[in-house]
Image (cartoon, rainbow, N blue to C red):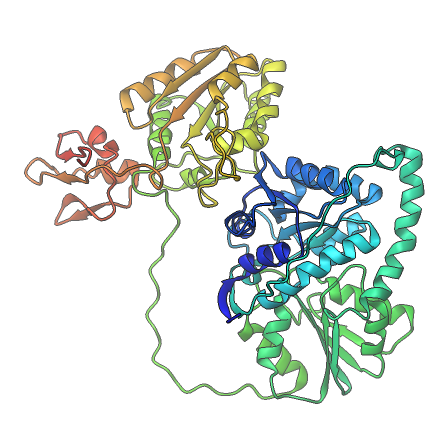
Length: 598
């Protein structure tokens, strides 16, 4: 079969299919999302695939499948692992029968995340094996190894690609020989019921197992030792690829590649450290390899200096690059950096902050709340999603943002300490199902005065428009019963549940005003589809004769389709979706149009 260009996430998915995966569950989150979508797209027909309501549910579904002897994979990003950590910590003691891979994509930078947490640390915390691929090509091969080791040791295994592995591309010749895994079924046994006594016994087994796993990993092909000399460079993940590119053709040093940072391949590391004077550790994000080598050097009384993040030789946060790795490695190895020819300095790039899309219904929702609360003391707690961008000027409508679902509960804490303020909680439709519902229950149960604003745009927009329980579609392509958010809120005991179109400003402002006047929990569900999935309307236009140049449309909405030209407002037709929000704001009626295309 000819080589084809694939994204790293696609290769992870195709590698899992080749390895015989039977079930894949997950929750979308950049940079992991395309993995599950690729499995669904290339499904031979016998793999069950689902977007779960959250990562905890996804992991538990995958665990149940693995109990039957099936090979299962669950996908998420690094902050999603926090949501899934409760079942994972227990599963680490119980173990699995079939191979189970917990695919967690880390996001150094961070490029699109709340944290720069390192899943390799979580692996050590949970006492679980972790695989750390260095390239898309290696990820394709390594995912099959992860399933094999999971079955060999009866444990879930973490798989930790980072953003540049996930979203990098490589030409790979696919292996069409697919394993066929036939689960032998669930066998009733007390091992599946976690009791304290069983946990104690299994904890002993885990502690006995991990050193054996580390020794096994010392001969695993994903860990390699090359070269010779008195200096050594130790790398893991994509930093190894950067080092290989930077040091290609150079010699006089040892190079250690760590593909399984936990349990650490101590035997191989000891061979690497033997005879060295100094070592430079290059990795993202935490000094995991650095700490492990420091411990081994101390354990065996080796006179070697370990350099890296803790010594300031590698940056402590953010992504590594080929350039940063080359500079650090060349300094360490006393190799002169090549002098680049003088180049004309490029002009500074314009500042381009992220903004809500032109036509986004969230802009109308935020504006309606802002107008309804004008002159009143109000606090606006936000959440994770496109609508986090509501914090930017000129809307300035997101005062807090912590994690998925936290806006609902943070608003409750704010109210208890400042009851004279009107506390709003904004949450998206997908996030509502993910972790929003328990917070609503908490507010109803404790009779807390908050106004819940559900921004229902009929999709999981920020991660690429995946379905959720409110869309009536599943990842298997089936039509399911739509779960009504207003019906759920009513069932939870929210007595005032209003619905409005956020692009109908008078109605939207009226709904917010009415909800804010209620005691206890009240809710407004703003329903309008994401402009990326809705049919666009005709672009609006500005009648320059009527425009007085007041800039209200620009100053209050911040829509990227509206610009000022020669002192008058103008609308860029290639950006405008005809939502009509600006027409409702214009005091002179200068903005017109927006009729639906025939």
